[in-house]
Image (cartoon, rainbow, N blue to C red):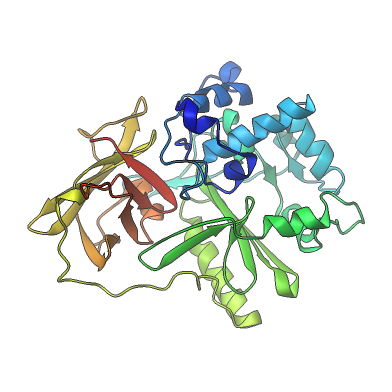
Amino acid sequence: ADPERARVITVKMLVNHSSGIDSEMMEQWEFDKDRIVDGYEFVRSAPSLFPPGSDLAYSNGATLVAGHLIQTVRGRGWYELIRERIFEPLEMEYAVTQPVEALRHRVALGHLHDENGKVQPASRAHLPLAMAPAGSTLTMSATDQLLFAAMHLRDGLGLNGQRIISEAAARQMREVTAQSSVGGFTQRFGLAWGIGEDGVVRHAGGTIGGCAQLILHVPSGTAISLLTNADTGMNAISEVAQAFLTEQFGIDPMAHYKPQNDQPDWKANGGCAGVYASRNAWYQLDVRDGEVWMAAGACKDAKPDVENPVFRDLKLVPLGDHAFRAVPADGQGLGDFGIFMTMPVGLAGANDDGIFQRFRCGGRVYARVD
């Protein structure tokens, strides 16, 4: 929505999450409106979180724009291009781009925990189809995902000898081009890949009642594909991946996280207080006698619905330098926010008056709105 910033966004910024485009998942639409071009039009109205290239904020909206760009330049649909340029050359037999194709295979339905902790089948299988380039429709077996991973480990050359991308491009994707850090947790991105320590590159994601992660250990040529059909699946994924990588290679996949000690004597000032939001979620910080308290909830019609928080009065434990440990000791339910709050949260972008403009949580950035 900011023409001046839109003009300087590059393709690189779209795929290394430094574009500043504020757009996560959109609301479910009717099927006949759920096209990639419709999603693109939605993202075009998104506000900007920061000057492009100056920070890192994971953005599914930016990835959608990259996918739309591909089909615009090629003059072909994104679904067909993915199938014809990646799946078919790599002989990924159990990989589909469109939900209707999944009916030919055995597909696991996602599962969610209700308010009573009981597991229930998800009401639908996919996030909005308009977000397809951001991964909302891609469906495949672990074996086929490993065929894709092997291509990257062989620098663009599939196991069957088919070259998908150049060797130079494959290596460039694994070079750090954007990063951010808060409370000892550092995030680094190359071109699409998240870059860890000790030769680990990865990407993870979640859908309605499902979580997945693809991890490469480049020095050994090893890939791990972990797919789950439960909203708590990322916990299992993390445990399995950590145990395997530690046993096999003596490395810690979470080495990029160096926890900081609590700083109970640190006192916040009024520059922290305010409402920070994206089009999907909002966080409200209050400062009381130097302590920071937080509430959070979902947005309604792309605006903070502060009257209906998912949780409130969560005390943040200071780590110093305007970073906080947000995981509650008493097990207070955080709803869908829990997965984003297992890592430190923090504030950034203070203006000349010391008023912070951005709140960082789980790789996402939320801009001050009040």
